[in-house]
Image (cartoon, rainbow, N blue to C red; front, side, top):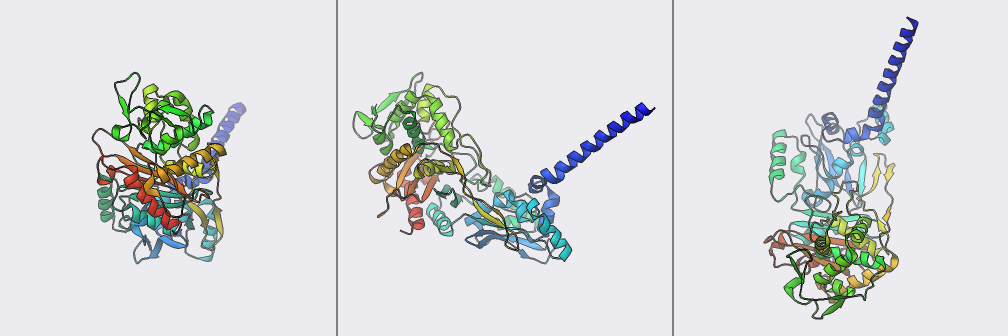
Length: 484
């Protein structure tokens, strides 16, 4: 009998330990993630009855909670509405949270682990609970300039500080007004939500970091040129045959340059000339010589094939892990199954601008409690060193030449040396092109990087190009940011 009681006691003890461990994990380790889950209705309803912390740009709220006379006590408002929707996302009673509203929900609602003592103090003093304030890295001038320059185009603009990784502008169009999703009329919110969700233009997609990504076109030549220079097999002066067309191996497909002519009118071109004039055929030949593995490894060093939290979660850009020879050749000028977000291509420009050092992109500067204590200060973090300083310098010279005398001429700014690369990416046969520009300025002392993507050919079908549509947008934003 004693032996049976001992066994039973051991079983009960193990059951107790298992229950204690699981409850501890739920209450301590997983507390923040469970609170932040958009499906947690209890947390969401509680958030409405507390004064949610503001989201700030230059100290000014772009999302705030104001008192209202209903059961929820506070109404979430977005003073600038569509302008900052890619940053704030929305906070709604019925359909969860997105953007910073979702990513930092526990801080904004005052329920994060680091705010535990604030919660206790509120209970003891009888004060109403308040959430923390989130100061973003967004620059108001840059954001407005990007919004205005993109105009009615479908696409995105992202501007970053090359030395810190701070995101200074994040604009995605078409956009939406988050105020329409934050009101307390449940039926109206649901109607608006499904109307936006069903919109074929995709206003809910934050095109700077997510959604159905586009082929990067010739902006990807920066990655391939970096792989070539880093390999030690090629220099800026390496020569490549420059025919007007090229039959792909193992394939009936033929590669041509833009316009179908000789790129630059000479039978051979250097790597520099191929990048400056954006020649497809020499880069296809370069891709064949390198083979796909070095290109893949270089792309991964820049951030391809991985997701990041900035703290918004990004969709990973893609360079395929397995390609045959013809696919590799086409991928070398940003086609095939290569896909990239504007933020990813901005990271390529950032690394080149910063001497080969790539800083991790970040959207949040600090998080402050209601009594102005800093709960979290997000310091600049190095993402990696994808290229050497020498490669960065060489690519910078190429990009400067591409703007001053090459395929990116419409990004020129009087008195400022701009480094850049355009892209005109093909989609399905007959579909409009996707138009790109990525670069940085001033080239002699880089401060900001910018990437612009314009979908649907900018309304020009297959007649537009990265230089005619995306480069002028980048120019306007850079002029505003640099105050030129």
